[in-house]
Image (cartoon, rainbow, N blue to C red; front, side, top):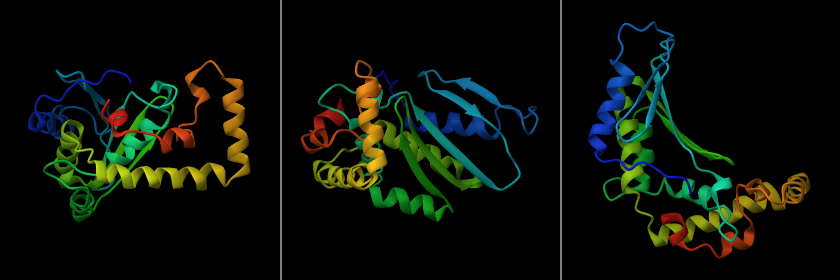
Length: 205
């Protein structure tokens, strides 16, 4: 997979992002877009929109199914699922509970070239979104028992999104044939045999 920059200080990352979002450039027009690169390599883009008292964050990782190797397809998507399963300080249940209590909701997606994690919540609680995101960026637990449950969820997701849908199966086979020598050959969700044999070590890697 592609290189990820380590988070050296979760608190500093959250504070830096919050400062950028709320006050780093007060002279900017309400619709101006502000961009800054942190010392750890993370690019931060702020797009003010004050039409409603809400804030939306999305964290993009430059890694997706095209970064996977033969025999380990689907690992980026499985990791996306596991990112909601907790850290030593915030359990998976607490992650959802804290966001919901702030009037928010979370979601995520995996693509061929990137993975995205989204949070929408009351704008006065923006720091919470950054804190939770930074925590799991650096301290994700990846517990074996949670992985054993979640890999079954992903396999079932593959069944109902692909294997139970003739059109999806045809498209999957078309891509596998048409782009045989390119990473797009593999489905984002992974081949079922790879999901059935996926070790937790692949996610850690």
